[in-house]
Amino acid sequence: MTVSMMSAVPVYAEEAETEKITFVLDWTPNTNHTGLYVAESQGFFEEQGLEVEIVQPPEDGADALVASGKAQFGVSFQDTMAPGVAGENVLPTTAVAALIQHNTSGIVSRKGEGMDTPRGMEGKKYATWDSPVEKAMIQNVVEEDGGDYSKVEMIPSTVTDEVSALQSKSVDAIWIFYGWAGVKMELEGLETDYFAFKDINPVFDYYTPVVIANNDFLASEPETAKKFLTALRDGYEYAIENPEEAAEILCEAAPELDQELTVASQNYLSEQYKAEVEQWGYIDPERWNGFYQWLNENELVEDEIPENTGFSNDYLPE
Image (cartoon, rainbow, N blue to C red; front, top):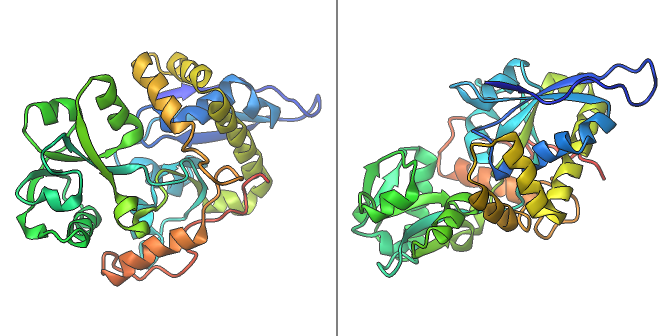
């Protein structure tokens, strides 16, 4: 599905041509993407002389479309980028901005069943999607907490409704991103326990999600890339300052969204987009490298990832 976001309107001079950009999402529209839709709605792309088309991801994901050059920008995640940043299967993409400053994911469970810390997952059913990195992270946090990972019951399951899955007791523990699923559970009145990965092991405070860009595009049109990220920054700054108005803009662009959940999620994420940093989109090299070093040490990637690989802050607006 393709959604064309604006008509071409020259802004710098009568003869200036609008530059066209394609941006591919990682999933259906949600509050991770709000700044993008705000930038379109408020004319921030237009001010930079850009015409932006937002498209849904193909089956093989945003990374493949950006790598192919069919989209200049897209949404990805530091963990899922890992196999493509080094070795023979390098994808020609670079993370150029953090959409959320910290990893807001963790494990949710029904309240009072002992899973408020990782050790409590012993003897419980965890919904896994069978990713080696995912399972290694679960093992790490359980063992860091003094638990026995071999006693965690791994149930292959793609949970689409976390509330129903916990209420039905089909599983006991689910990996969620709190800004959407956690907020949804609060709204629906389901009492839960939750722990964040980054609170158990700081190395898991990696960047998720990020904006990626095609490397050939960055090399040939760096100024266009900077214009795009300037407009995107303005969109997210607006969402930080005006979460409810931003939620309304997102719901207008994606009317299938639940408005109450979108507003609540937006209020939560408005404090997470930048968190404590001054510069929107900034990627801390120490945190980026720390996670990839952990993958290297645990042999979770085929090819060792060198330091400072796969990201750049060079295209961010000051």
